[in-house]
Length: 510
Image (cartoon, rainbow, N blue to C red; front, top):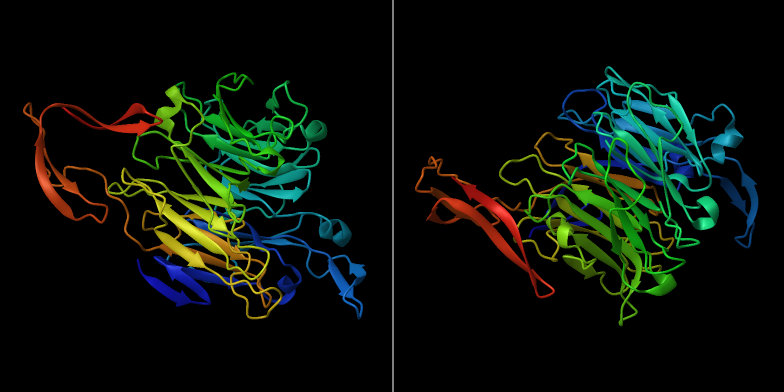
């Protein structure tokens, strides 16, 4: 590993490509970069950076430090900044999307505009659209266009408290258009529900599918987290994941997997249970899928429980990974899990994908914002492949000294996000923020520079024959170990879990 102290951050196997500080009126917001995502809005083949800065009330303190006067945010009502990616990336926004409540500054100040962001083509016109939280109970869709995006909402979706705090995307009905999946975790007195809006040219604000908490529970915050999931039952429709951290009735928490369909039913096809940790657990607090982390040829699930605690009560937070090839024999036992360091807690998740044929495995990022005292905050990156482990391959360390002006990276990694492939190298970059920095809140674009795991492949380019194939075996740094000749057949890796053997196909030779 290679470590570098740069811009106040201690970097291991990372390089900073972009640093954006809040300036001017943005200094009135302590949440610069709370909303982050990527997407190619100008159709140039490079992913663009999207930064949301939520509105914030201004206040005046009296001589004893108590809030004396609250002033609605007239000077800073919130905005979305878009920076075009590619070789000419700079820190001047190319597109600015203002708060839709303007010119009513009071409504704008009380909104949560841009707290949560998501990009995708939801209208079916081949342009990238942007979904943004508007209030705690609504979100809006900005429609993409040639060279950019409209800055006035195309649609506004409305619900109850918590609606739009967790949304994701998938083509659940198999019509070729991305659909919007929106959680509403306070619905029905903390029961929760999820609304799915079919995408396409006729997208509207009326939910086409509603998923609800199973009837055996009175509350569970169903829809606290959501994620689309690739089609695993080969019916042409993508699946849906829903997290319920307090199901059932303040219990261990669960993830529900629903198969898509046309029509899609509302009965869960798989339930992943959290550990029994009582009311302090938050299993499925964040929820993502990975295209293929471990080389098993199937998509995988990653989630985090920031409220997990073990026998050592100084450790808080746990990561869980479930491999897709084991769903047929699923038992809720994670295939990979690990806990936070002492005095830390895991909370944020981001997934980075690779389009490189030699290293197609997913990577995931875990955020550890640090304790509520002078503990530093961390970001950890883990590469996949058949030799995966729980040791971080990349690391970013910030420093948190409460209310001291030279704190850097304070509150790192609450909301890390994939930026997509900003520099065109075939691997996604990472967006992180430090929105407790006292001098100015900051967003960084980071490029992973460490070794990537390589696939087993025929790099010697010898043709297969009836007698088999000669292949090269390489380590995770791409160094050739030896050549072997395999006879015709299908080859598997046997994986042992809880005294059971599961097989994963890695190579078929004719």
